[in-house]
Image (cartoon, rainbow over all chains, first blue to last red; front, side, top):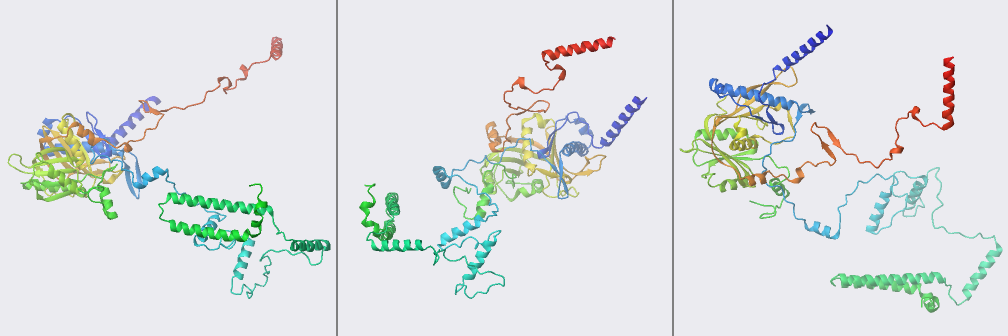
Length: 307
Length: 308
């Protein structure tokens, strides 16, 4: 009994469904072919010519059109829809009928002069990554340093360039520098009631206590006299040797650069190079003269190893 | 015609953009149609041309003056016009005693004629004759081709492709459901082609998909197929060649069987089957010698007890 009623229920449900879909179902011998991407439907069914002649042409064509359009719309409605700004829109697939193009596909362009040069040199395109916020404010410091280098001005130390979080010492230093940057070097700048006077500035120079170690003091005075007496110059051999070697290296590299510059360029910038070279030489010569006054005399003795 | 790297180099950005728009591209623009009249035209032909121009409105140009050319003999002036207006579809209307009320539908590839099909108008109802509210301009129409001829006959097949190309409008990824109003229906019957244009009304049905009711608007034509000039097979093939970049990239290692199930291959390292972890079954574990004997004894003991 229960089984019968279940069957009946199912049958009834099917009937209801069919009723519902009656308005949109169309009976055709052959199914239509669809190209939804182009909103096209192809109906390959045979058209009854007799019916066409009996009925009024327009009515026949219209009913045929209605049936075919219904099937096409049914097919379109099967596709996924989405809501775009209060409008329901159906997402169409790619068109399937092959249609000829308008123009032939684009040919690859010949590489530009820069592209050829880059290929020759092996230069690759580097994408600049976005800068990440730097808590340590390294970037700011480097940026200011670069600016200073470009404009050849001195860079103030850490604490004076504003950073994210400044420590107490940094702020104190900044305040001190600002205070002393007046015409009278901060002598007449008022201080806040509880502000302490900064006494860490200035060159650090240590002095020995006036009365202390007598023997030390004696020793030092005698050493001083010894140095004044002797005719030998106070020479730090290592220091002198290192200085001389550095000078030599500098001269060598300058000479090489000069040579390389002459080879590479077409000789147009001789005057500039000459001037630069001359200037360098002059400067070096002067410095050499100054610094090498005392050791120059002892050149032979100073560098026995080299010879 | 101006070429970017050729005759004229663009001096402004606007000019450069204009030329780039007309240059060959991967995904092409909507095809423009040029609608023109021949040496002699009748009222029907001029009205028909105007109506089709209205159907194709934003992407079509209608020339007012007459052009004394014969497309089937000499297509050079057509090609010149297409270069000037960057159109790859044309519709040429003419009228003479031998071929009254003649329309030539055609398309070009690379500014050379690809296909041309001549249709004669036997009966024609214009837009103005049918008094109904029309669809807004530029709606993408639904196209329906009915009749066996469109499948069996070569000329009809080309005509089907040509008409789809002509009337389909821009290719869009999605369409507003309420905006599917315009339907163009072509029926091939007894050597004639009937073209009707309807406005579809979406009525409520019991379910989600609406019921369609049609209302005739727009021009209705009864065409008869006259001459054709179809492209050779290799030219047709060249025209269809798609650039490689447009082909969908195939994912390796994935295959589908006839039922649509997706299959993939997993590559694993060699496994030591002896050390494979399977389910633990305590009863199947190997037991040591005395333990087994003891078990035997106990079992015998128990057996004895039971008996007693």
